Length: 411
Image 1: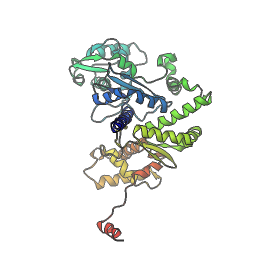
Image 2: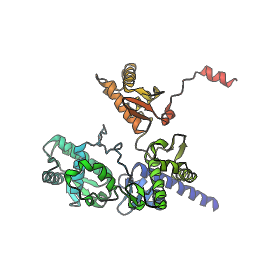
Image 3: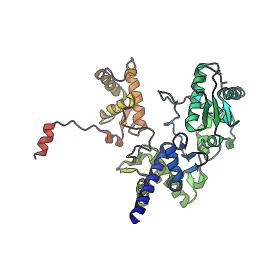
Image 4: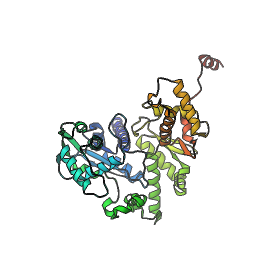
């Protein structure tokens, strides 16, 4: 009986750890899209909720009857490194037009529990036509319809709309396409993860562009820390803020460098209490903690908690990133990297065919550096690329011959 109890405890611990990492990778899990993941989070929701609340200060809402789990990942700073992407082969990020249509279509979807793509397009057209700031949606233009389809495909992936009949992609070819949707208004309202509703700011529309940073800070300000400006008003609130701010970076960023933290955050992380909590949090969530003099990172041995991997041969940019990184023993100029990229393209003539134009090496370096910067491996300034400490994890070992191995084995 004791052995059975131990097995149940281990099984629960493993499931809680898996549920935490699933939500870190996908903060919105819908039963229709991921039934097994949702079922796990539903069953272990209480300990998972407590983990996120204690370490990160993030709230988790699980609606068993409605079939979704939503982790509200609030952060004090805007992060443009993880934009919504189009559900197409290129996975291009949303542009300004798609962001606009996403917001307008989201507002119009609240009007009825069932709608068609044509009715929704008409509502979006009227809404944008009556707004003096927005460009009117033109359903007769193929580019506009394609942007609209990208927005609806995103809503589909999130579980906000469900296709009852037809196919959303058919609207690209014809504005007369017939697609019927069922709308989950409750889930739609959960998409915006802010502590303050945008409508409560009451800022004149013409002032938004010049006050954007201020407004982003206002909608994400968390009153629990008693923050006035940037100064907590009590030691309890200050310690709570330090714990949550440090852990948010650890679970959300590829690597955390001590130099990038504030003095207070660095002191907290280096304190015995801070280190003990980091190790405990890593163990409870199934991460491996790597600690170095320059900083630390959490490694998921199962690859669950990330939406992107490196090293990875899924794209030419990631392959190039690894190859260019291996040539960076020290700081190099972007021009030097372009020469290296040109040599790689010459050496491997059947590789990276999309980068074979006159400007191909420069484009390949640009895309590869975006990968490296996104994973916290390089810092770029004044045309110079500086490898960061975490880049040493990906150094390619020197090749060894069988004769060398045999010689060492005989010593």
